[in-house]
Amino acid sequence: MATKAIVGEKVGMTQVWDEENRVVPVTVLRVSACRVVQVKTPESDGYSAIQVTLGVKDAGKLNRPEAGHFEKSGVDAGRKLVELRLDDVSEFTVGQELAVDVLEQGERVDVTAVSKGKGFAGAMKRHGFGGASASHGAHKNHRKPGAIGQCATPSRVFRGKKMPGRMGNEKVTTLNLEVVKSDPEAEVLLVRGSVPGPRGATVVIRDAVKGS
Image 1 (tube, rainbow, N blue to C red):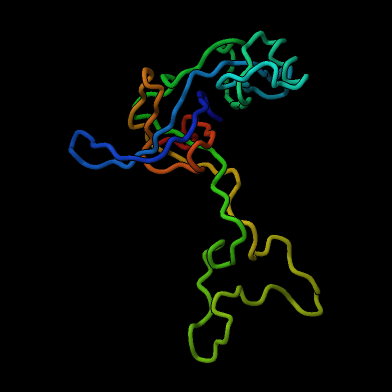
Image 2: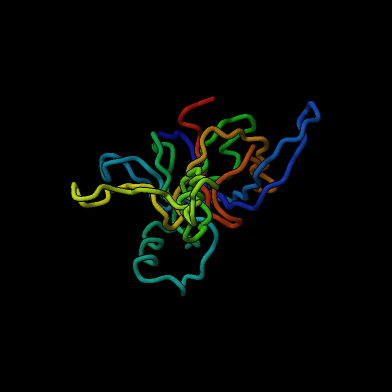
């Protein structure tokens, strides 16, 4: 499990140059200061985590459970609540602010977000199937998945069969990305490579579980 984590927003991709004048593709993440609303411990909740909120939301737009939750913690209401699972939460307190300086340049991180939804897709696009033959008697079945089950026994399609269906819009984690730059003043984190999700997506950044 992670030892430190932060929540950010995906801005988009760009490129920077390193010390050897090589182009480095990076994803820009906006990491505004987030506030700790709740600290969960194994003794009280069965696991260790912190719940944080980011942004600001008008108190009049909260429902009663949300308003009561923020009032109990004494923290200004935010746009959303995100839970960060951590190994040790002894150093965190309710009301504490976490900023981008939690992570430093050169560190390895894992980034989690909900991927772009691509709608209904066929088996070739969704699962990378090669497709049927383009000639020699193939007739209007070039992109079909082929046989999907048995006849009389067991007379059904096995669960989990790779078939056409809704593609994307699922939780995805990209592992072991390098932090190229951490800028607390601009509240920006540059991560080498691409991360899941569209522009504006909420992303969770934590230190890499697999290391370098």
